[in-house]
Image (cartoon, rainbow, N blue to C red; front, side, top):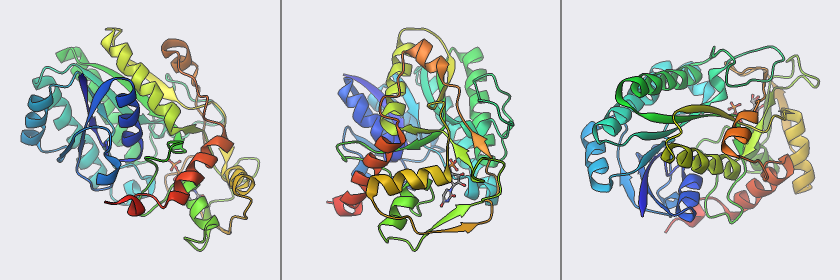
Amino acid sequence: MKRVLVTGGAGYIGSHACKLLRQAGYEPITYDNLSTGWRAAVKFGPFEQGELEDRARLDEVFAKYQPVAVMHFAALSLVGEAMAKPGLYWRNNVAGSLTLIEACVAAGCRNVVFSSTCATYGEHDNVVLNEDTPQEPLNAYGASKRAIEDILRDFGAAHDLQSVIFRYFNVAGADPEAEVGEAHEPETHLIPVVLQAIDGQRDKLTIHGTDYETPDGTCIRDYVHVCDLVEAHILGLKHLEAGKGSAVFNLGTGEGFSVREVMEAARVVTNRDVPYVEGPRRAGDATKLVSGSEKAVRDLGWSTERSSMRQMIEDAWRWHRTGGYESHSD
Ligand code: UDP
């Protein structure tokens, strides 16, 4: 069985990718330091604990498994934290990824699928963001991901490394079978925070800013179902295995939802009110991030079947009610 090294395989998106890799006939090898991931989320292949910056450990893991590709999810990914602690983001995300990419090349593995972000684009008034939109990140999270994209391009030119770079918009939902799901501590992402507020696990949701230049004053984001998102990764992997070369794709639906629209959708799905308070803007947030996603549809044959707001919230709610990994722990 072909093996794929999945960094961050114990995290939210990485764990869903491992499940789909397994179903697609690959063995996913999770490489994760468990700083934010969950041992209980590693269910679909072997687990190797390690740091991205630990070159000797990476060399050992590449030699042991000889993967055909790396899917690189491991990263810090919170805008607020990145604003407060940029050094952490440059060290962990950029220096860590550089070490990983060097180890990958040294091991003769030539295929990387990389998780980048729409946060690399920054603020662009009223335009749909496509892959050619200039990348002008507003925060160290976006800047760190842009830098890793540059590293992959330079290594592509010098070392024959092929990469598929996916710029994610807002990832939401969970495995419909609830084997894996979203579990951050502390949780800061909108949909799980809304569900926690509905369920009484937190007092209320704080809306981060109601004075944006949008129809209802709250930020607009493009939400994509995690299962659709990881499906694109399998298509990206096959694209690389077929020798079709490096490429960049946005992953979103092209449809934007405001914070208030997400709250309303959650009220309808759960039939419960969302306790909330209106707060100030969160530093580093762009007003509107909506994807132009035609390229992934056209070139990879991607589709976003599960990404209706209703479906994403239904799946997230089902996962939420399982109690997450605490109640799954062995
Ligand atoms: N948001 C909010 N309250 C929260 C969490 C998020 O108002 O408790 C808003 C946030 O300002 C942004 C949107 O919801 O406009 C999505 O934020 P999230 O943190 O989920 O993802 P991001 O866009 O930062 O990747």
